[in-house]
Image 1 (cartoon, protein in one colour):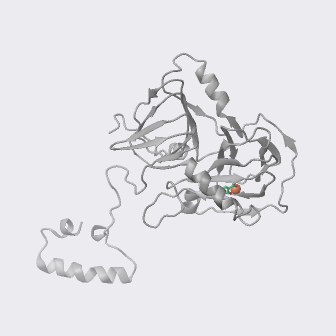
Image 2 (cartoon, rainbow, N blue to C red):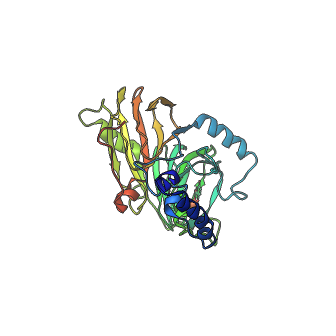
Image 3 (cartoon, protein in one colour):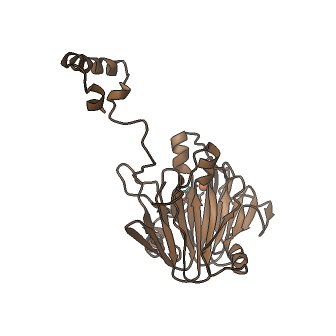
Length: 324
Ligand code: GTQ
Ligand code: FE2
């Protein structure tokens, strides 16, 4: 920038500018033409990388942690998946964090609420043992279910069985850190009073049921995608991808950050030169404007959790017509 801005100026002008810059800085001004950091660039660029976290390894480490940490000591027993880059040890993506959480039989993850929107995707739970309570409504957590706990809803989780339960948490915490509207309140009591109990509720999405529906429609052996409703979640969008047979998706490249979680099946995702292999329970991320496509090895249920709703609401969303 500097070379451009001063090209063609006389030695005297260049010297005067050099004297001006520190005087500007003392008054907390930066000369825009002299700044190291440009204001704009041609297309999105990000330090976040495509990355996968293995459920096999994550759940084994969470089991170890479970011998040392109780839900009484930790607000939540979770392993946060961070994208390894300078200065980051907490965020998977610029707008969303992701974590594996585990609760043992008989344990209760205490009641609280916060401004970040959250959701969970159940990876392993014994039917009728594990529940999330949202604003007094008790909802079952079964394998493949998505449970929504939007902004400022009271929520707690419990396991009344004897086996361990595991799920993925996704929260828009990094976005709330950036924009700064953070609020958190612990419940007065550890446990939340249950006012109602439902299996069917807008905050509980059974991906198994949606997948069964998609499987009954024509073309089920091809790669198909369906948007899932996520009521009250203004920053997060859900899409279920399914196929009944080996299939390949069309490449995408868009203004959105995506977290994928493998609900069922195995396959791989291609990011240019890089390929991520995935199996049930694994979680991987496709950062902003990263071109990628999936290849299913057999029947697959892949849940995509993205910040698309956020970018659409702000008018920033766009897709590349021909992903590179
Ligand atoms: O289950 O309420 O992984 O509040 C991080 C923050 C889970 C939760 C996390 C949370 C929760
Ligand atoms: Fe929470």
